Amino acid sequence: MSTKEKTLRALQENGGYLSGEALSEQLEISRAAVWKAITALREQGYQIDSVTGKGYRLLSCPDILTEESIRGGLTGSLVTRIYTMETVDSTNNEAKRRAQEGAPHGSIFVAEEQTGGKGRLGRVWKSPPKTGLWFTLLLRPKASPEQVTNLTLFAGLAVSRAIHSLTGLPAQIKWPNDVVIDGKKVCGILTEMAAEMESVEYVIPGIGVNVNTESFPEDIAWKATSLYLSTGKKWSRATVLQAILREMEELLSRQEEKGTGAVLTEYRENCVTIGKPVSTQRGNIRLSGIAEDITETGELVVRQSNGNQLIINSGEVSVQGIYGE
Image 1 (cartoon, rainbow, N blue to C red):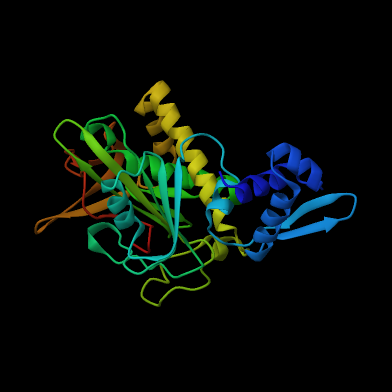
Image 2 (image 1 turned 90 degrees about the horizontal axis):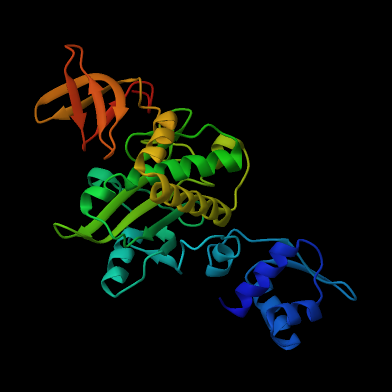
């Protein structure tokens, strides 16, 4: 952690005024280094008050996605390295490139803008600058490919929990990779992996959250929303990211301690798909029924009108009442 990061965290944790001498002693750096860090933070847009005899107090943080702004509010040990970029083709692509170069487990890749963001089935994911949260988490689990197939579900639940904890809104999950508020999409998830038959080299859930988007193109405005549009207020994207990462770490720890079933029970409770009429396309055949359950490996269980059970593990699923369907 850099001196600037340490200074920012100390100010955030203190809440009130902290003298230069106290910062110097706490961080084991010189007074000159403290002043340099304060100056650098102010140049980035942090509002830091200074009062003779009292010290420094953090007044507000800019809505920027820097290593300092992200790490300053993180707890736990999931995140090991933070890569921030102004512009990238997609954070998933960057994660794959860095993974090949040896980036460690727990690396996150965050961009202000994606020029080639993508969703499932090759769709384009709109990623305008300075409004949304576009990031990818790199994981290197000691597991087989079958054991990580439900990671998209974990990511969706983490986002759902984070949004609810921050806003109070009942964010729900549309199986398998969307998070919705009042039937409109606020988040999409694309998980990719590199694996052999028996082991996973890496798995990368890419997450896009519409945070402060004020409007959408006409072709998607009817089915998309943002935290801003849903709450009427702007949100710190770093704060949203920190909340998601905290929830993700808690869910992964719960899985390790109690098994996947403990997480999937909560996922089912928050999955808007369960109990709804759904349909999917297989070749030229349209199949429909009532979504009943999610399997341990993350598949959707659907009961057809003839009583047959249909297991869906991929493809597009339409859910009645979601996105105007």
